[in-house]
Length: 292
Image (cartoon, rainbow, N blue to C red; front, side, top):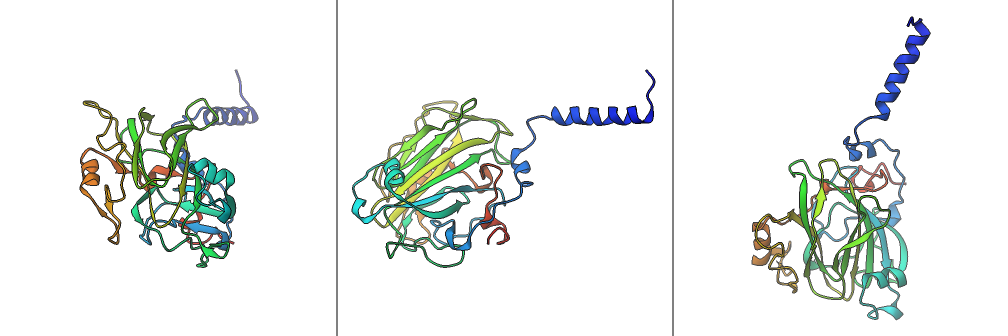
């Protein structure tokens, strides 16, 4: 077949279009997220890493968890004992919350929620240190040193928390770890493995609430699924605010139980393991250019 110059140009465009359409889905979705124009957030209604005890936690522009802050009206405080009720019957404060990771060892929470403009949030005229809930979403991925395969996840929380995951081929979140209820720091472990490949982005939903003041904890841990012995860690189900950390020190000091977890391969998911959903941006990690 003879091609003139115009036909040749059409052929090149067609081949390029075909190649683009057939790109491997293994290209990193987290890299694509960084090219999307970010939403602007209000300095007075955005909170950055409110529960980390003023420790520096670094993440990238697309890393972290995004969610909302709910507060329970005084008439309902102390009535409910589940995170679903705290979110259903709580009041949306209109606050966007961004976390770099879920790694809050047991500690006293007395400083409340400072907005990005430095002003302290209040609810019904009082600093918000109890009777609140967080609804967070993110995607989790492997870090650069983590191998594809099966992982076991666990929550350490005070008070209640539930981790839900959206599995392949479904549009709904399903509970994966249930650590709900008003209780001191309690370890709840997943009983089924999470299988994750090199380029997977797995959507997660994390619901958490703090009942009465002051101590809080919220950690998401994982380890490679055990290939020998029991998959049930001996500390799964252990409860107590001095079982894993000493909250009387600043920062909280790991107790022997937590050191034992580390020796068995458990570790908190790092900021690089979390990717803001919907190709979003974490404004807390972008030098303020994403704030109004």
